[in-house]
Amino acid sequence: MKMGACDGAVRDASGHSVLWHAIAFGHVGLASLVLDEFPAGSQVGADPTEVHPRKGDTLLHLLCQCRPFTAETAELFKRVSSVMPRLLFVKHNAAGHSFLAMAALSLNFWVLKFVSVNYPEETKAIVCSPEAPLRSLAGNIPEPCPPSFVPPDPIPEHFAVASLLAQDESGRVRFADVAFDVGPDDSTCRFLAHRVVVGAQSPVFLEELDRLPVHELKQERISCRIFRVDQRISKDVWRGVLQFLYTGVVHCSFTNDPVLMVELLRACALYRLPKPLLDLAQTALFQLMPSFPPEIALQVFSITAGSGGQDLDVRSAREASAYILLRSAPMVLQALEASDAAQILDSMIQTVEKAFFHASTQPQAAPGVGLPTAHSSPRPHGAAPSGQVPYVAPGQAAAGY
Image 1 (cartoon, rainbow, N blue to C red):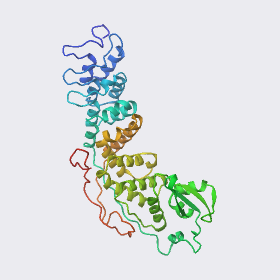
Image 2 (cartoon, rainbow, N blue to C red; image 1 turned 120 degrees about the vertical axis):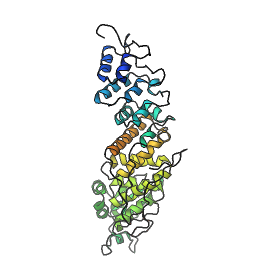
Image 3 (cartoon, rainbow, N blue to C red; image 1 turned 90 degrees about the vertical axis):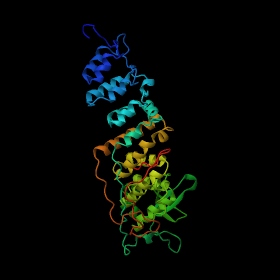
Image 4 (cartoon, rainbow, N blue to C red; image 1 turned 180 degrees about the vertical axis):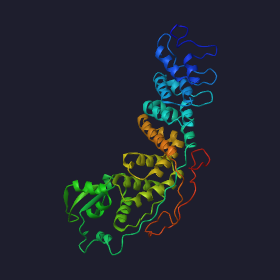
């Protein structure tokens, strides 16, 4: 190169450049030197649009086949991708594979995360293409482990906290000093409660209720703090939450309703509700998600992988929802803005990466583990199903978690 015998534009008889051969034979340092000496765009510069005449591979396809894929390879990938035209960035080779599919097949999490963050438009186009490259990733990672739900012991009868919710002869709820407003603004429902009861079981309530001003409620004839519950949580779900806080018994008539169980999961994440409620929501959704549209899995993943789920034990729900989203990404992400899709993809890939490198043996369900029905006793109503839960993707046969 120093003597001018070759440059970035020179091709051999097979039509390949020095840059191509350097990458193909694993000489990453030499490939970087070619880019240093002959920058893309100069008269004799390296050509980022080079494509294998028979296989249809681009330089990105070629880089994703490098073994090992080192930090030096990653730096070269950054440089090549920065000058790669969009049409080639999203190009599928002669076998119908994008470079992203090659990265997924080889579990190259670095490439998957890098392009999701830095090239959201192009990444969304590839992920939502008929190829659906992330499905192969789902087939190469550990299957999510099912969670378990153990009904807690009820509050002892002699500690009659639930009696505080009863109205006295005048219709007042004795000692109530909290009002929870639940539901949409046009149909709000109000639940009265006691700060000492809810604050003792939720660090969020303990802190937030201390900040709220006291209001005089003439209709209820009490002085209390008014707490506006997130509008995405319905009154049926909130009623069940309060019943648990006052009795220690799970009253849940909607364990087969994924929408309401998502609401319960959201409430647990937002307000740090007691673990039995979180375990109930997570266990039910783990069983429900494969049988319902992937939008349910998207909501579950957004809750468990978001800031609200960082300190919660929701690994099973997070990994299960990510697993489903990998297989249903074209359907779920197509309607989203590229920037929003990129954030979800980045979180999904991080979740899958952690699951892969920290895989553990699937725990066996403890005897008597199950989902309670409405007004259930602490004893389980039925045993939790064992084994894998089948997942049927649109147009595909049952594949399983």
